[in-house]
Amino acid sequence: MVHYTHKRRYKFKRNPFIRIWGISKHISSSPPRGALADEGRQVIFYDQLGGGLSDRPRDDSLWTIPLFVEEVDRVRKHLGLQDIHLYGHSWGGMLAIEYLLTKPQGIRSVTLASSMIRMPLYQAEVDKLKQDLPNDVYATLAKHETAGTTDSDEYAKAVKEYEARHILRTRPGSFLLAESTFQM
Image (cartoon, rainbow, N blue to C red; front, side, top):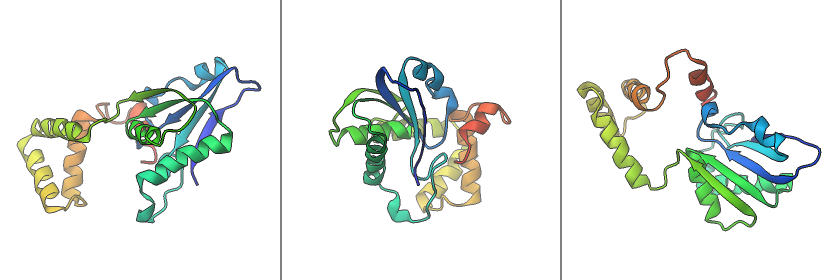
């Protein structure tokens, strides 16, 4: 089951707003739901299959971009949303782009936040960041990525170091860190 939440108002004066999350819930990057609803806008926060509060099936054949694109369309149809504003954060932005490539009707605006538009450019920038890591951490990442052993504990520890320096730069134990990694 795909999970979504929305703020209801009796009568909406403006086009609804669909927020597509990244891999996890990054609350600090979310437009204020209440403020948008107070403008007379229906606000839908959608968690893709496998993320947030949606189901996490173990069937690997489900993890396809066409399935995720279809989910966005199903949420729109289920809620009867004709004209919408779309907001995609991180992976949600990549999904928003894929959805737009299907040429859906009624998209009034799109906002992409922290999204990767060109994967080769993104990967080149990640590689630069990895080179700034301590030599042993960089060597561990390179070794396991080359060998295809990225499921090892040693690799996971090196990834945590990379994330601490470049992704989740919040002090351990903070509220934002706990929320951003909720049900990852």
